[in-house]
Length: 117
Image 1 (tube, rainbow, N blue to C red):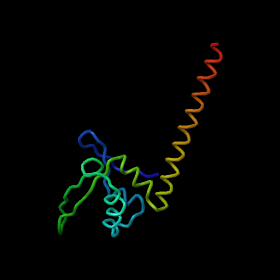
Image 2: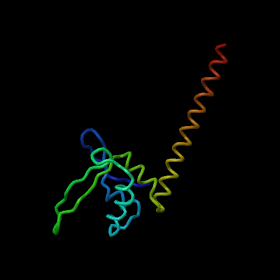
Image 3: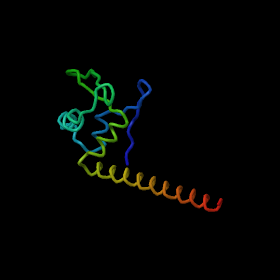
Image 4: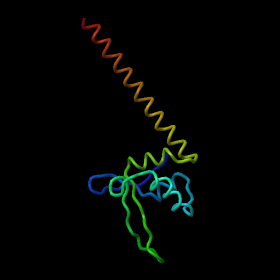
């Protein structure tokens, strides 16, 4: 998978949108277009799912964004890159393992109930 810095603000965890895009294999020269298409147009809510900050640079100030962990997961799973596919496969594997664990737990509980009778 990949590692990305997580920060905390107002009791919620956030990741830098540029860092996420870079980890997903998105060219920074296409970041603005990628961000508008994959985040802003998807209906995520400002100050809930993402927040914006102005960052001073050597030239003009730049708008940067942080995404909530939940939003970052959604965006990552929607990414049409090799890394996006790896992330989707990871979450599917986690879900399958969870379901299998739930099934085994139910089987164990059923066995205990039968043995109790």
